[in-house]
Amino acid sequence: MGALQYRYNNFYEVVFDHGRRHPRRKALFVGEKTIRYGELLKKVDAFAGTLHHLGIEPEDRVALFMRNSWEFIVAVLAISKVGGITVPINTFLKADELSYILEDSGAKILIASAVHEKVVHDSIAGEKMERIIWEGGLRLADEKNLSFEEALSQNLQCKPVMRTLDDLAVFFYTSGTTGKPKGAMLSYKNILSNAESGSRLLHITHRDRTIVFLPMFHAFTFSIGLILPLYVGGGIVIIQSLRPFSNIFKQALLKRVTIFFGVPDVYNALAKAKLPWYFMAFNKIRIFVSGAAPLQSKTLEAMRAKFRRAKMLEGYGLSESSPAVCINPLHKQKDRSVGPAMPGYQVKIVDENMVELPRGEVGEIILFGDNVMQGYLNRPEATAETIINGWLCTGDMGTMDEEGYLYIVDRKKDLIISKGINIYPREIEDLIDRFPGVGASAVIGIPDEKNGEVPVAYIEPEEGERPDVTKLKAHLREHLANFKIPRKFYITEALPKNATGKVLKRVLKEQLLQQENFEE
Image 1: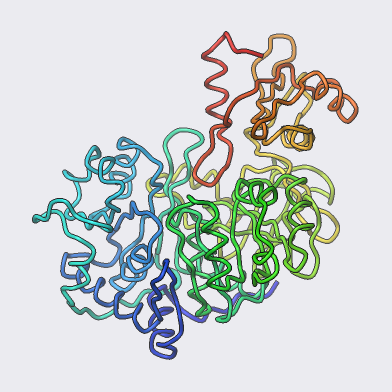
Image 2: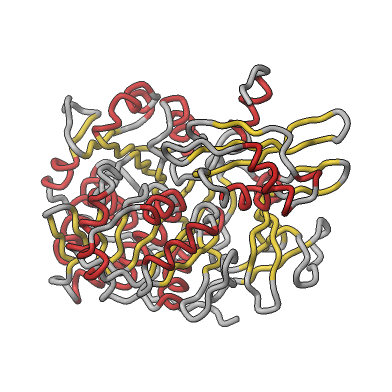
């Protein structure tokens, strides 16, 4: 395993280099607007000048509660120039949740989009933040509130603060599946390792254009969708809203997109969509990458059949690893695998004593490399439990084949133990997902006096369908041991999901335990 070599020490150096050497090269596309690298550098310098003037110093935290926009990217690069730390916040959160992260992170300034004004005003932002900078409109300009446009137009200057690879760059707050969200502290080396490793593995260069429609606040989009293309001097096509869905393909075609990053929900829809012949004939997409949640086998097969000129690559990662860990390489993909470790990283499968298991055995996935976070903000105990001798314990269960390809079995905490026997929900879900009429499924364990736990299944039907549960049970009995067959099947209009389409099983468990009169 060779050590990764880095072209830059921080995010600002990236835009400074491309802006000086290739000012005419196209960097960002937003609708009809195009921003070249030279112009992007000017905007970053201007915004950094305002941040410096407002008192942002090295290690100060600046929170972003923003929709997808070129302003988001300018803010991240400008924060880097003044030596601050970016705190991207999930815009799906409510006021109390936003307040918690602002307080926990110690943010001094909040940069927010006007479309999220109500949530911001209902939070502690007005009271606790030194300033709020608004993207997309400003209703009230006063000493506290400033528009993004005004921040740019002040044309204040400042010298860049030298930040090294080991300095902190970003705090990503985990989705908080248990308790309050935790801030994963990532250095420049952590995130740039994803950019260096990913660009090397997927042969991404300045000639590539990436489309970004997933939320920029998410670690996957931030590192792989934004920083990686900027790192190589490529182009980013920014989509501000998933609606209408057809706009994604229109922009992909018009802007000659070559790299398409998505999540399973998007690929499920794309696999079924009737796309016009001219899109299929003239699109330039060479790579589809799927992350954030497991991809259904039927979706993978449908995408490969539909887009024969492109590679469909499934990957794996988590916020604590900046986030990418593994991806299927261009030269060889394996179905149901998330691929081997990316260049520069190591992955092992271990037992409960951290002893490496033989190939093919199921155990916890641990990883080592420049992508491993520095720890959880304000949580030394949680950090000590998660990072052991430099190895990150993921809490995910998996197996590895002889060629080092990783197969995710399930989350450790989603494991169902019935009469002392392990049941992996993902195995059951994959079979349910293949059944006619099923859009998506989630299997959870519920307490049972006799068995300890038993599986139950939630099913989100495909539009206009209602799967036959009796036939589904018979289908499962053909492939699974009896103790793995869900005791009950609940048909639900929509499974609860987070911003990237990952099913929130915790919510399903809470609902089921609180309500006794579920309709089967």
